[in-house]
Image (tube, rainbow, N blue to C red; front, side):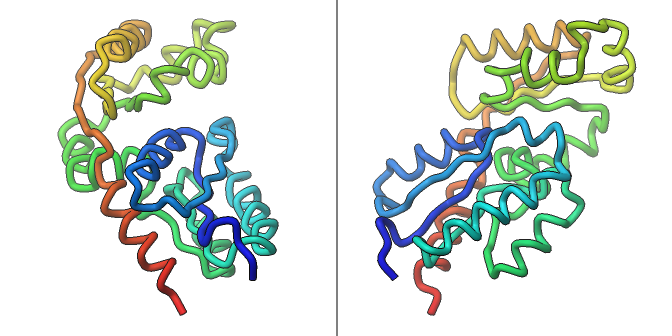
Length: 204
């Protein structure tokens, strides 16, 4: 089988920048990356079929494929289609898990279950992906319905950016939530992806 790269990583666009940055470290120079639109998170039931289609299409070109997704609200359906195709993914329920670190994320949840999370990507696209997708821009009364049970917004920062921090704080103000910032960097993505890449590339 001829490959332009020995492995393809299929990722959600929400973490494509982070995956690409890890590739640039030079450890995975023979890796190709294919991103899937983050808009699917508004319809998570569609994620498994789209990922499965991408895998099936890529089989003609790539022998090794890895998926950089969490479960992302698919209720185990993504894992089912991946198991059928013998493809692995990042461990965790969603990107907050592997960016904050599973233990840290669970601790934050235990401390304050009513927590809404933003990443760098979600902060940059907050108006489109949250306010407009939920229809709050057109129907402000929906704000209380969606966020009435939340008490704080935690910005999981991958980069040390004053501008993004200000944007995240503004998002918290817009939602009427207490603001906190936690610097995560790449979190557990580095060891997770490194281990996955090594495992995939050396599989017989």
